[in-house]
Image (tube, rainbow, N blue to C red):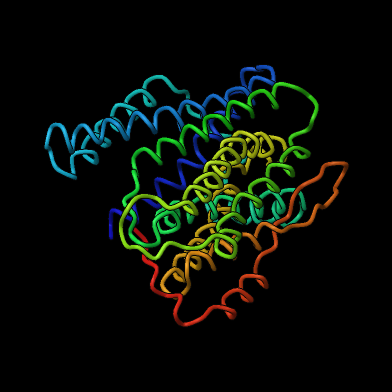
Length: 334
C-alpha cells in the first residue's frame, strides 16, 4: 500500500514537474518556440515508445533468461531511477519561479484554482487531458480481456510491443504536424479524437456482427484480430495526443502555476479510472468499451478562434450502466 501511495506521488510528478521544467528552461534560454514541439515529440517517441520496448525486453531477460525472479525488473528500475536522479541533481538548473512573490502552498493552490476557473480554455484543456488520459489508463487494464474473452493464448509481450510501435508511429506523425504552422494543433486534434473514438467502437461492432468464439483457450480469434487493429489505431492516436497536449499546455497554462494546475487535472483523471475499474467487476468488457465510446462523443467549442474538443460522458455512462445485465459480470482483468 505504501508503494502504491508513493507511486501515485511519483506519477503526478512525472506528468507535471518535468514538462513544467522543460517549458520554463526553454523560455529562459530564449529558444525558438517551434523547438519545444519537436522536443515533446522526440520525448514521446524515444521515452514512451523506444525505451518502453527496450525496458520490457530487458525485464524479460532478467526474469526468463537470467532466472532472477519477478522482482528483478523492479530492482533494476530502482537502479535506473537512482542514475536519473544523480544526472538531474548535477546537470539540471533549478527553477524557483518568481522569488519576489514568496507564497505558501495553500495560496498557490488557490491561485491555480482561480486560474482554471477564470480561463475557459484552461478548463477545457484540463477536461480533454483528464478524460483522454483516463481512457489510456483504463485501456491498459481492458485490452487483455477484450482480446482473450475465452482465455485465448495470446502473445502479450508481442502485442504490447506492437502497441508501443503504434504509439511511436503516432508521435512521429505528431512531430511532422507540429513542425508546421498549419494545421493548428487545436484543429487536427479533433480529427485524432474522432479516429480514437472510431477505434474504440470496433469492440462494440464486433460484439454485434462477428460471431464470438465459444471455445476455451486456443489462439486469438477473428474478432480478436479486428479488436487488435482498433487497439493499435488507438495507440497511434495516443502517440499523437501526448506531444500535442503538451504543446497546447505550453500555450494556455500560465507559467507561474503550471505544475499545480497540471496536478489538478490528475484529480478527475483518477476518479474516472476508479469508476471504470470498479465497473469491470459488474459489467462486460463490451459494455465498458461502449461506455468509453460514449465518453468520446463531444462537442467543439470555439473560443478566441481556437477550437478545443470537449468530452461529455456522465449521462451516457449512467445509461450504459443501467442497460447492463446480470450475466455480464464474469469478465476478469488480467
